[in-house]
Length: 152
Image 1: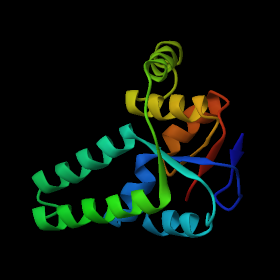
Image 2 (image 1 turned 30 degrees about the horizontal axis):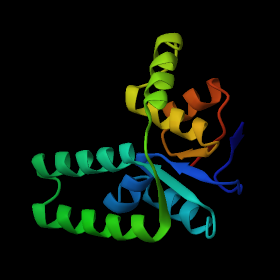
Image 3 (image 1 turned 90 degrees about the vertical axis):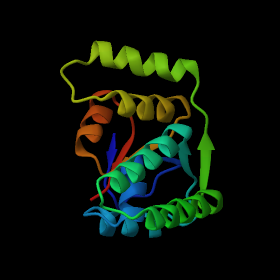
Image 4 (image 1 turned 30 degrees about the vertical axis):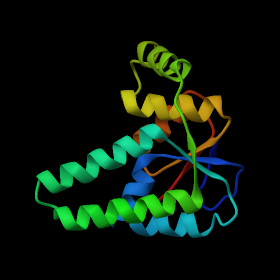
C-alpha cells in the first residue's frame, strides 16, 4: 500500500535518507522538508540503526572532504536536538534482524540491501508506515506489501 507524499497516515518510521537530506541539504532536501512540515502532530519514529547510518554518512563526508569536522559536529548537534524534540526511538531486536535476513534470503530478485531490510523489519514489527525518498527501498516495501510513503 503506497501513499503519495501528500497523504497523511498514522505513525511513520523515517528512513535515514530523509533525515540525511534534511541535515546535509542534498537534492532531496526540498521534498523532505515539505513532507516533514506537512506532518505536524504525526508520530515520527527512527531506530538506533538510523542513528548509526546518519553518523556513518556524516563521518564519510568528512573523510572525503565534503564537510569540515566543525560543520559535521554542528550537523550532529542539530540532528540530536531535532531527534530529542521530534523523533521517537525504537531499539532493534534480534527478531528484526532475523526478519531482515529472511527477506534477504527469499527476495533475491529485489534490490534489497541489509540495512534497508532492517528498516523494513522495524517498521513492520511496530506497524509503522515507512517514509523514504529511496525508490529502491520503496520498491522493496511494495513487494513485501508494507505501507509506504514515498517522498519526492
